[in-house]
Length: 98
Image 1 (cartoon, rainbow, N blue to C red):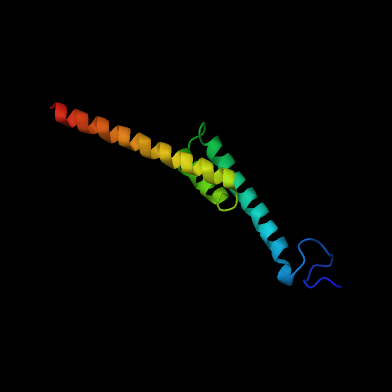
Image 2: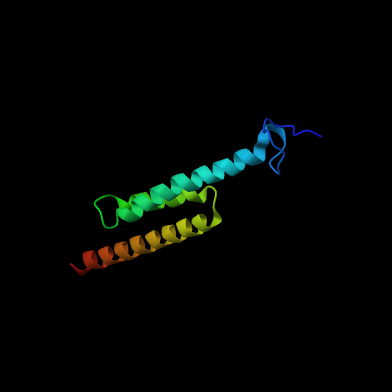
């Protein structure tokens, strides 16, 4: 039986429109783009730039395809919420002291 997709070779990605190949290519492309944005964000920790905006954005890009990035993103969001709560608590304490 011949490969039903436009791919010139039989593979595990066979099928209509080579969906498996497209999904794999999408994952690789997102990994490359997310990795570049993440590296740029890490570089911005020591160079001028909005690292604390770029790194979570990179994790959000990577989280669309990778479970480990989803866990890192969730952990970063929890930490941001904790820091914000701590800051608001200190702000309320200072305001009530006067």
